[in-house]
Length: 444
Image (tube, rainbow, N blue to C red; front, side, top):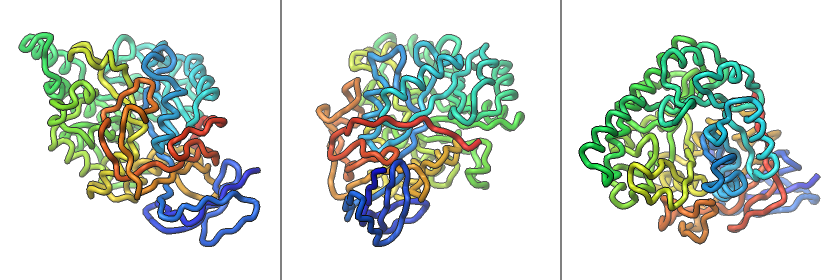
């Protein structure tokens, strides 16, 4: 069994920062301590570098099957590990939608063949598949996804009777996209009547408004409290929603948890004039006041997790007018670097950033033996160079879509090396092929 000895790295883990060695044996961390020696191990000196647990991204859209002109599990998992994300949880709105156990397992089979990162896939809920949802194995699947807005066809579940059926019967974690569809549609009609097809994208946060978010998220919270549902609300974007969440109890005991995404913490409505459709997301990037409230809630533990909502579209799709350009963008290759930049700006401490990117998702989803630098845990590790900057260019993007909202940005840090299950999968700007990630298991 191969051994790797990481020497002199500055470990950031469980609220502490300290210099130590880490011995990896096979897939696992065998030992952490000072002055470890092992003549059979390959030694890598990490002096001056940070060693953090790999980010667990609980919300991505990798577009396979059915939408592979935008992205696929092969390309996006490689972009993820290049960005320090060692584990992802992928959404069910592929084509076909993952609404049966058979279709869900097809995605796991494909990931086992091509994904270089660890993976899990959400089971999708629709208006009429509750029997399939209830078959989901909580030990092998991260959760059930409910689109309470911003979806189409049978995956848009915004009828309270249907939602009650799901919330009252499903004992697994339910992750929700919360925007009130009726409010959004009314706003959309009003703005289209006023501006026509040439409507500026800067009105996106007024169409997909804070009110629309709050109506839906407050409904989800109300149902979860009524039926004691394990609820996780994704990509919060407005100040008004922050009071829905509690920070008085430890994360492991929370029944209602929340997530913030990198783009809502980086961009504001002032960026629409420059970035245009490239920062059109659902929920929308909103005001500086909203962003400030999200940062405050994140630091106060009302928001529990940092994620990406990585959702690539082609350049051709994104350069349409407002009504035709789809919402979403690619983020996994630069999410960790973007958050570390905010550490340098004083928005969040390094220790808390690691907590929100790695520890908290592991706790929230009860992921088995991941998310920490601990003896006996899988060696999902990221080496960060705080003294080497990284500039985002088209030439160094690994996304299939070939663009990034961060193009031209220079981050103070760079990702030096990424380990997945003890294997080096990224080093010095190169993907190291030859290994695939593992399916997550959950301690439920």
